[in-house]
Length: 364
Image 1 (cartoon, rainbow, N blue to C red):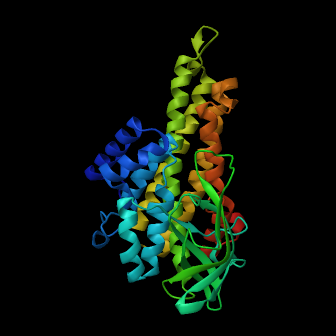
Image 2: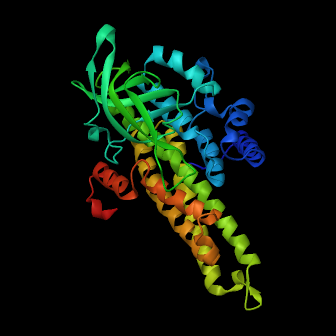
Image 3: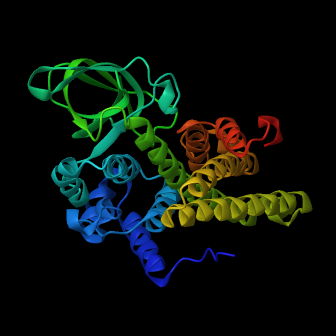
């Protein structure tokens, strides 16, 4: 039985990240996080200028970012872009791009989703055709691109004659247009990327993009589950504090048995989600292959539903003030619902898991 316990070094990393996020609010935290702690290069191998850490350290950072709903581009750049390059096996691309990402000098992202799907086989409308001098030309539209309006390194999944492939597209070249999306959750930046004959360079092997994206999907879900746990935990902390301080009928509302039961149920959900997220991080760190993919699907399902439920309880137990858009309870509520859909909803991941296990989808 594997003990899901963070190391002393990981707890020190947590303390350092939390301290920076306490001193610097919002997007202003990115520079000190990269310069003082090196979070941008956390999962980048040392040969490319990174720290050479893995999913367990990424888990720690994502938990802390979730607690504050931080808008920094860690998920898009340090997870999606970095892991796509590493999984591609393209040594030249890694040597050129990873040092920039590791230092935080450049922000990267992966333009992936089509039609609200993150399944590699669903990539149909974005196509790539051979261009002059060994380049390619990409045409199509990508939705829900994390930090797509500000990223300097844009990786794009497109379909060629050989299958799904990955490309690097210069964000300032002709035929590329990034449009910032107006989203319900304003704490996370997304964009719509339109490609019209944009010049691109192949990353990895033509037709190998499906394998790369399968791996990146698992790592992305594992990282996002950690963020959801951190945010859900913070929701519970804030709600418990409110229940202790809010007085009705001459007593704190937290003293009422019904409220105690609801807070206890929320605590169980948070801790169950934490176990699922940690299990996925440990499996990914061990590079367990099939087991890691299954653990990621479980974590994404469990943590999405737990965060949504706890955020809903936060709204309910805060009363009328909780439904105002300016109140932090509503910010967590909107983040909960947006992360439930990001990288696929729980029902989709349970269906994938059931298929992998040879079970009817209804069983899960």
